[in-house]
Image (cartoon, rainbow, N blue to C red; front, side, top):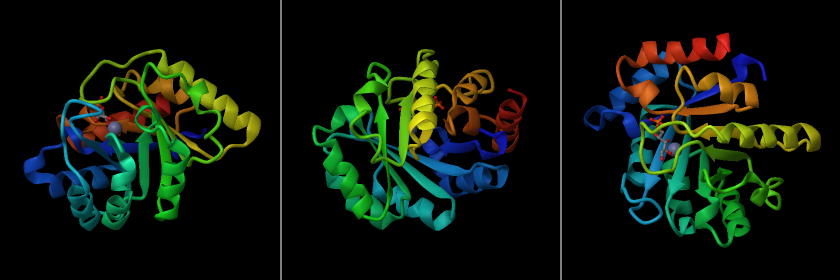
Length: 222
Ligand code: DX5
Ligand code: ZN
């Protein structure tokens, strides 16, 4: 995929919450494409982060695509709240959804794009009966729950497989990768076919503008 079409989703998990609006503005001005929100419930993953209220606040600060990653059990209970809060994409975890097909339809009926995410231990082959229905597939390249973890390399093969399926069958889903993305790991995932790169630490720790520039250069230089 041409490098100009690679999207960077800035994950607010690593932002300074005491100045959220300013951090969002800096990311947007620095060239992020999407804002990524990590919603954690203390059950699917141990930490608790935030809910639809933060999504609503971010919506007021920017027109960029809001990409919400639900790391929660029973995500069907949150779909309407995030639709009303202005999320554009809503991604649920395969591992949290016994009725995945129903949740995906519910998200679309609420007017959002629907995504499904797989943990590092979940093969993408488990998604074959849903890939025609989703707008985005999120490959976790760390175990969900925390920022600043080390990239798990076998995710690259999963991205390659998803890319091959797209080429072969014409599916429309975007391939997104989340966890441990930095100027070193970026080349492997882009080469494999990732289209949306989530980055938290690599965007928000230090100077946001120069971080985004460095990530963009890394995409360009392969
Ligand atoms: C982890 C989250 C990620 C997190 C990535 O569970 O889903 O979005 O912010 O953080 P980094 O980019 O620091 O690995
Ligand atoms: Zn995430």
